[in-house]
Image (cartoon, rainbow, N blue to C red; front, side):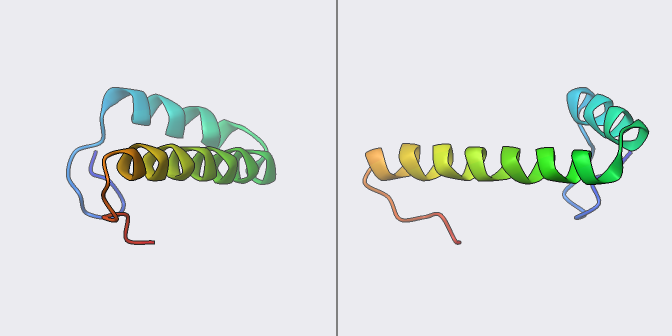
Length: 58
């Protein structure tokens, strides 16, 4: 299985996440995914900021 964005194979944990998300209410799954994206973005910015980098493109 390849990632929808064409970035290559999808790791097993992502496959499991996608399978579980498909079986859930679509709005709940989308809401949880959006929250996870915000949290991961915040963490990435924090880590890169601590490293003195402004490499986060968004």
